[in-house]
Length: 418
Image 1: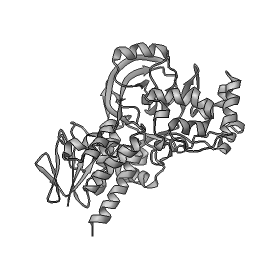
Image 2: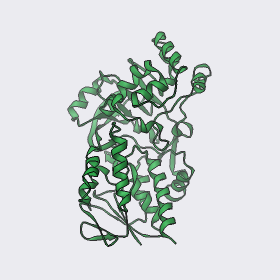
Image 3: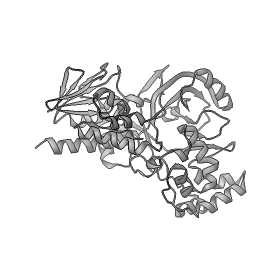
Image 4: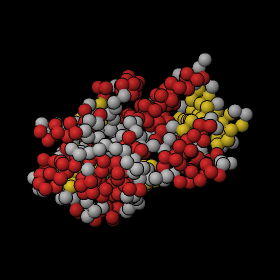
C-alpha cells in the first residue's frame, strides 16, 4: 500500500519514518526545506528559532525510546535545567508564579497573603471558560493580577471568551497545575510545584547548537518531495488523488485544518461553516543579542507597558553558550516596533533578524471545541487521517507530535497489515 503524508514538519516526518518499513510512504512538503514551524534559520552562524524556542523533553517512554534509538542518540544532546522567570509588577520572580509567593512577599506582603489564602481555598472546578478555570485553581486575585493580563496578551482574547479545554487535556497541558499539598511544600519547604516534564527530567537540545540536527535526522531515509504544494485533494475509486496526479491508498494530512475544505471541495455547508470558524494567531519574532549574565531559559512578561510577551534565551541552550535570544509578540509587527519595545528591556542588545509566522498557535475561543471536532470527524468519516498540531488543530508540543505519530503508525499497521 502507498501512503501519502501532506506536510514535512515534525508530525509528518515522524509518522512517515515510523511507517516506512512496512509501507511505501511519500511526504509532500510545500517549502524547500523540512521542519515546519520548528525549523531554525541560520543567521551569522546562530540558530534562529523563528517561531519560539523548541527543546526536547517528554514524559512518554515510547517517545524517548524512538528519539534516542532511532533519531538522535542520547549522547548527542545537551541537558539543561529549566530556569524560567516572570516579570510581575516590575519585579523578576520565579516561574510558575504560584511558586514565587515568598518572592512576591518581599515587595507586596498583602498581595502575597491574599494569593496564599485563595490558593488554599481553591475548588479546582473546571468552570465554563478559561478565566473561571484560572480562578478556581489559583484564586481570583492571582487570576486578576497575572493570568488575565498575560493570557489576554498572548492570545488576543480575554480568558472569559476562551475555552479551557487545553488546560485539562493531558496531551497538551501547558501549565503546572497546583495542589494544596505541593503549594504548602513550596511555601514551607521551598519545593518547586513545577511538575512539568522539562522541570523534572530536564530539557535537551542538540550538541550541534541547532535544532535542525534533530529535525533533519527524523526525515532520514524517508522519501520527501519538497517544493510541492498540495492544492487539490480528491477521492476516486478508493484512491486519494493529489493535484490530479499523485495517487495514494492512505492519506495523512498534517497541513492546516482550517483550509482543508478548500482543498477537498464539495464539503457540506454545515461542515464548511465549522472550518471557517477555526482561528489561529500570527506571531512576530526577533532574534536579538542578550546580556551574557542573563541566566533564565525563558521569561514571561504580563505587563501592558511592555508590548512583547515572551523571551526565549535560545543561546543558553548551546555549548559553549551563545548570547542570543528570541523575543515574541502576538500579531504582525515590524522591526521598528521591536526596536522601541526592547528599549524597555536593558539586557537586550541589537536586533539581528525578524520573522512573522502566519500560523503559530490555534486559538481556543468558545467556538473551538464544537467546530474542531466536527471538522476532524468529517475528515475521518471520508477516510482521511488528520494528524499533528495543525492537522488536528491542537496545541501540541514537539514530543506530543511524535507521540501522536507513534500511536497513529501503530493503529495503521494494526488495521492494514493483516
